[in-house]
Image (tube, rainbow, N blue to C red; front, side):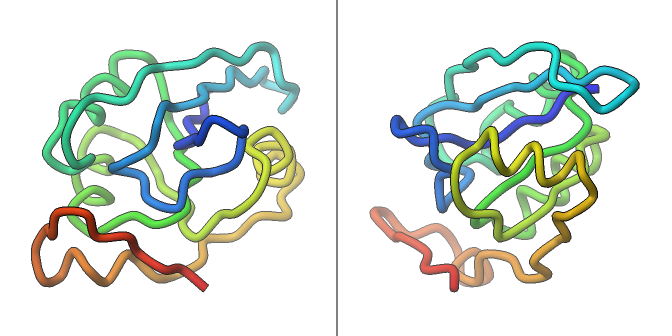
Amino acid sequence: MKIAVPTKENNEIDAHFGHCEFYTIYTVSDQNELISKEKMESPQGCGCKSNIAEVFENDGVKIMLAGGIGDGAINKLSMHGVSVIRNCKGNVTEIVRQYLAGNLKDGGSSCASHAHGHEEGHVCSHN
């Protein structure tokens, strides 16, 4: 199984999936052990309008641990077999470990700004 995490340069989860600097992709064994970690460049443009869902599907990504993400992106990822856990914060490796230990649950709310369209330069605030 592979897990994708939208990442900022300091190895923290990016607060907005569609504008992240890159993705950290973790490969996980059948025993829930981290096997490897790689960096995947983020496509240009907002996440729900990019081809990242297809790229994830082709690469075997099944889970994405995200900070903020809109419903359009969640729907697109879901259509490509990627489940999303929302409102994650902190160090990307620690978040993956928490998920694998069963200690991470979906935050339950999406990025509200996407209900009104995409605004240039908009930064979502997720509490």
